[in-house]
Amino acid sequence: MTCSYRLPAKYVIHTVGPVAQGHPSPSQKEELMNCYKNSMYLASESKLRTVAFPCISTGVFGYPAEEAAEVALGSIRSYLEEKKDKFDRIIICVFLEKDEEIYLKKLPEYFPFDRAKVSCKL
Image (tube, rainbow, N blue to C red; front, side):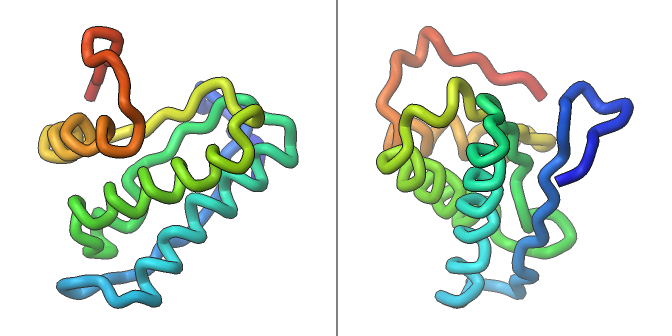
């Protein structure tokens, strides 16, 4: 974890996801899951109440976006089931419209919510 300097955040938690070529292996899935869980652990231990995640490993690292979203949402859900009082807000940041569509489709599977209260911005 480092200072964020001129970014609109207090800190940056660094993580490196797996490089995937084609369908991710079980070990790559576990590595990606650990990126999210370890980042959430570090944030909660540092008493941070909000955390924002990019789509880890989906760019040049080649992890398929749909599978990455499943891992991200599953990891976040799993962590919050044990430590739901640690965070006020968790943000998924997307850059591409296709990622926005994936997350809007998959979010209700992991976090049932009122769609009228959800907003997405690219």
